[in-house]
Image (cartoon, rainbow, N blue to C red; front, side, top):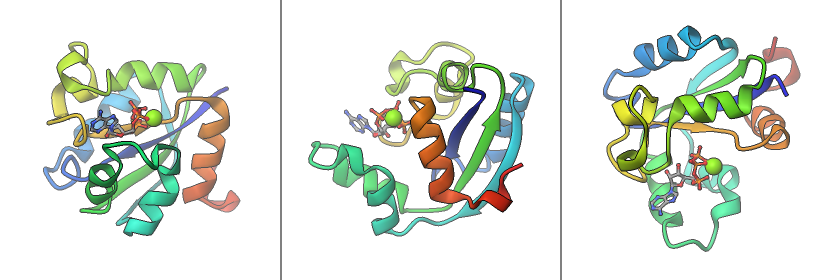
Length: 137
Ligand code: ATP
Ligand code: MG
């Protein structure tokens, strides 16, 4: 697939890292084809991360994701899903490779700066969660 869905998470937005993270994304060859900043309610965060309901970190994740503004983006590039997950780095910032977004900006396993879809199917579902057809180019 050639699209993925990404978010810049709270804390990264509040600490003014949005500009640099978008620079890293475009320098890596992605095109931003849709973008918006918004603040998720707890219910919206639960709906987005519903697959993790019941896990021990779920409440922390929902509280965090609804704690401040996020930037939602649809990114286009050949091999987008896999390449963007490489650019993000590992979920656990202690394991994230040098030069990745999470290595630079994640502060914990929960507060890990960015989200990226894990499959073409989820890229499409997640893009539609945030954007209507006429917002994506
Ligand atoms: P994301 O889906 O946000 O891109 P990911 O695919 O790397 O991250 P997932 O396993 O899908 O990781 O987990 C979703 C999010 O839940 C993680 O980004 C992280 O913020 C949080 N999370 C996952 N595992 C843990 C954990 N063990 N402790 C705390 N938070 C966690
Ligand atoms: Mg995930």
